[in-house]
Every structure is written in C-alpha cells, then in structure tokens.
Length: 264
Image (cartoon, rainbow, N blue to C red; front, side, top):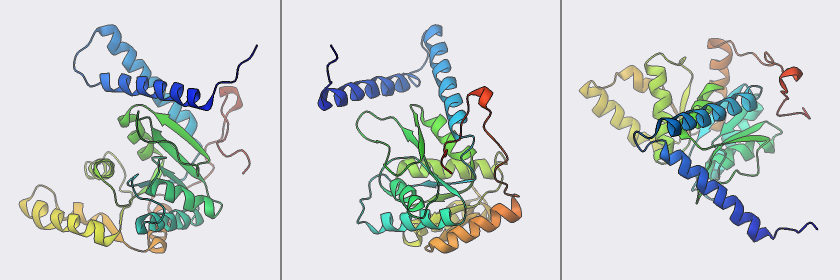
C-alpha cells in the first residue's frame, strides 16, 4: 500500500540531502585526501559541469546579473533590478542569475514580466538559497567554481547589482578574466552609482595610483542608474563588437537534448 509522505517529512528529507551535498562540496577543500576520494570528487565535479553544459547550451544569448540575495521585494534595489531584467529581456537577452532570492529573483522576475527568458544557476546550501519562482529553467550546483563558470560562459555582458562578498567575488573574477585576456572584453556594468561609486573611487584613486591596476582596468566598468541605458549599451556592444548571433546551436535528438524553452 502506498503511503503519502507528509510535507514536513519531504522537507526534512530534502534538507538532509542538501546537507550531505554541501558537506561533500566542503570536503573538496580540506587538503589531501585518499586518492579514491579525490577521484570521486573530481568525477562529481565533472558530472556537474556536463550537466550544466547540457542544460544551458541553448539558453542564449544571455546577460548575467549578479547581486545580493538579501534585499526584499519592497527595497529600492529589488525594484531597480526588476527594471533592469525587464529592459534586458526587451532587448532580446535571456536573463541569467544565481537563481536565488533578492535582486537575483528581481532580475528574473523582470524578464518574466515582459515575456522574456529567465534562467537560474542555483547553489545548494544547507540553510539558505532556494530557486526563485521566476525561472524558465535552472540548474543546481554544489560547487561554487562550476556555478561561476556557467554564469560566465554563456553571457555577452555582466551586470553587478548591489551585493556582498559573493557579488564581489563574481564581479572581480570576470574583471580579472577580461584583464588577463582569458575572456573577451564584454561589458561589465555596475548598477547603482551610490552603491558602487566609493568602490570605483578606491580603484581609481588608490589601486590605479599605486600601479596595482591600470586606469584602463577601471575604465572598463560602466556605472549607471538607468535600466534603459544599461540594456542599450549592452545591446550595442553585443551586436557591434561581438557579432551577436542567435539560434546558432540546435538541440540534437540523438543526444537526448531538448530546448529549455519548448513552448517558444
């Protein structure tokens, strides 16, 4: 006889799995372990990478939006991010975020508001992030470095909304990849002059002055308070500088591939 599992039991079971997954990811950075365990960790990371490639191969062209998970719906930064998502979708881009709440949710929500495409790359954490409800498709990741790879790989531009350590990590990894020539010079937008202005001043007046970075590195950042301006500058760069194309890659049935947007 089939027994219906109570909702609380389901939640507890899911939480238990997430904690185990998070613990496995934590072990990755605990120093040398047995060769077998390290081989298994490498295999899990490889499998997660392939899963991301298969799921995200057909979602573009994308713009990645970074930002804090902590801002609520009534916060001005949430509303700002929602407007940015709207304008990016109207410009023809798929909005891809970390898939969580806060300004990530807002950007995905804005894209959905205007009939655009919305994708999330969610990180599995034991106590925090769940995928927001405004996603056409999403991928769960245990490893931050693979998640960051996916957020970088498919986008023609990157928008940093106000955020914390995670946002800074993502932002400066993209800036470093561009600076070192490992990535094309895609637009990097700092959305919110009041929030990002002091950081830009520090980069220019301290780091550039001391010679640890160049003024050109600072000038790469586009600082704006206008969702329309952000979308326009990104679209212009995507088409004029980087030869944006759409629909180049098609799912192959014999590889068991399918579009993440089957109704469109």
